[in-house]
Image (tube, rainbow, N blue to C red; front, side):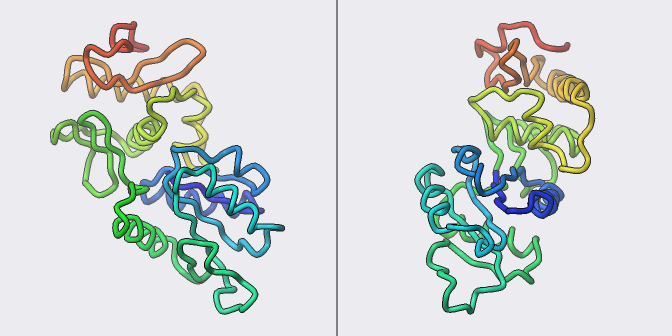
Length: 230
């Protein structure tokens, strides 16, 4: 996952939707809430126009403390400004850079430093990474829809934590294109049906008041619970 921090949540949401289009799960945050949002789910941080954030240097220091090593990138028109400290960031992109070129550059940066890619979604034989044509289970393709794939990617990112329906709605869907929360159960049911047809068991289970979690093995304690759907 990648966290996008911007004073304008609308601008952050626009960037987030572009990453979503590329299949990369993202979250957005205002600067004052970023430290509360950051967690080990995020493997990169992108800050558009950090010069517009008061005391952004302090924010970046805090993010480095709580992000567990996630690299921090900036988008700015002030690269050549002597007063702008580019050394605060792992890499700085010009504001005119396209989102796709920024995403590719972030992936290359992570690859060169043997970091976890923002586009890698691997768990217990499941590969939902953006680098292949379809989701696979031990190399066997499963025909999930794009929406189902994004839900699966978020649940992989969240594992071993449970994810409530509200969380799935927040992170696995475009900012301006969120369905009714009741639709989450329908999507989970479809994922389970397709996975069950292949393996004889469901992939995602629900615990009351806690949320959804991927059952990594057939003998998982979650697999012994009643599935949310057959």
